Every structure is written in C-alpha cells, then in structure tokens.
Image (cartoon, rainbow, N blue to C red; front, side, top):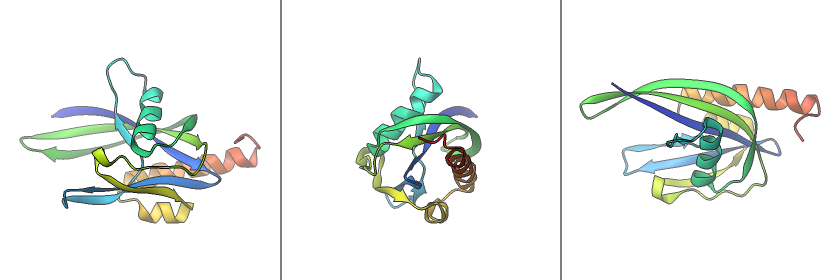
Length: 145
C-alpha cells in the first residue's frame, strides 16, 4: 500500500465555484476541484494555494480549513490510499486557465448547483457542499469580505 497526501481548494468568487475538466488519454474524464501533492517542506495550506494556482492560474486566498476526504485507487501492483486536505478560498477574479500539462482541458466558475452536478466524485461533492455552506454562513455574518 502507498500512502499519499494532497491538498486542494474550493475557490469561490462572487458566489461561483471554480472547477476543472480533466481528460487523460481517453481513460479518465471528469470535472474535479483543484488539488495536488504536498512537496517536501511544504505546509498543507501552501500546497493548496500552489496547486490552485498551478492547475487553474487563479489567484485566491485561504479563508479557512474545510476538512479532509479519503479514498483509494489501484495502480499497477499496488493500492494508493490518499488523504486530501481541503481549504475554502476566496478568488480574486473569474480568471482561470487550465493546466494542459496535467491534462486539464477546461476550467471555469459555476453556480453551486451546476458545479455540484458537474463534479465526478462524491467525496468532492461532499466537500463542495460543506465549503459552500460555510461560505453562505460567512456571507450572512458579513465576514466574507
């Protein structure tokens, strides 16, 4: 078994959520939230910000930690157990540009119900739901900015 840790962000700008479409050599296709692997010496929040920036080109700031998701998948001769730490982020604009080197072919900001239905994985849908509810509560309290 291989253990892996990633970090990512639910980026919200003016109520809309940033998602990416990945198309990997016709073997994997689907909409996801930006996330990636922690590099040596990096804090989880730094990883989340770096990965959002690398995968989407978007600038954002962390508002708060949302939680983690866990899942496993198979690679040749092994199983990867992955933990992803998620952060709620406030985007600076609607700008996004998908990172082609990582097989992202589209990106954009979508209304909550659109982003929720676009997302491929149920664990990311659950993280999105928590993040969006936190966002709505922060807005209600005039703490979103």
